[in-house]
Amino acid sequence: MPRIIARAENLRKVYEEGGRQRVILHDLNLTIYEGEFFVLLGKSGSGKSTLLNLLSAIDRADSGRIFIGDTELTALSEQAQTLFRRDHIGIVFQFFNLIPTLTVLENITLPRELGGQPRKRAEARARHLLERVGLAGRADSFPDKLSGGEQQRVAIARALAHEPLLVLADEPTGNLDEENGQRVLALLLELTREAGKTLIMATHNPEVVPFADRVARMHDGHLLIETQNAQPASALASFVETA
Image (cartoon, rainbow, N blue to C red; front, side):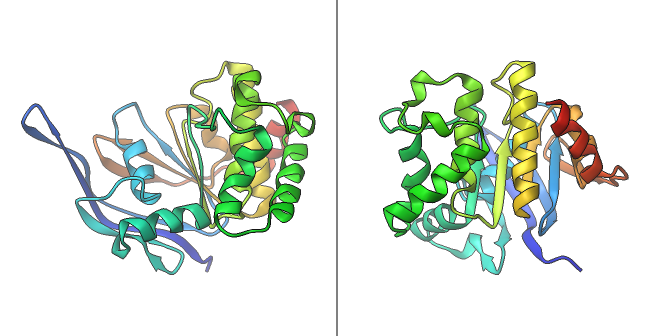
């Protein structure tokens, strides 16, 4: 039986809107296994991003528990959650979230250096990943000199730089044109599969489904896990070749 990497128990999230409460997640339960590519499919407002924000401790649930690896994330203090996220979770955002005043190389090495890793070692890892994402020659460039697709490739390298337990991707191609989106998606799937990482991706794009190990459809804060019968490894191989 594969190791459980992430588990959510009875997660509930409520927001105040106009003096009224809106339930975003309804007592949601979820189990994610090591090395799995899990897709959260649903329309905008269905609760996908909220769930990723809770799994990464960017936001807090109103009730319920979250475990990442052997750690109960919801039992940690806010500071401890921040440190845990920095050390064990990689995130790829829709809008890249690169620091504009840092070079490409510095954007990738910063989390590792904050975690106490020697600069030379952090830079060696970053340069290796930049080569893998096809940006070896842009290490000293600043984000505003890169295209959207290039910035997202840097974001992928940053998310993988610290060998995280879990990688979360929130609409990673949502801000890119179709061609760049396909290339970025192929690269993200290839690198996470190659490294044996666990990837949870929130998307409204059904084209991702054939490459997933499992798919869950989200609707109004409810989660319906579907059986995935495709062969994601072979499907991914053909997808990467055409991207």
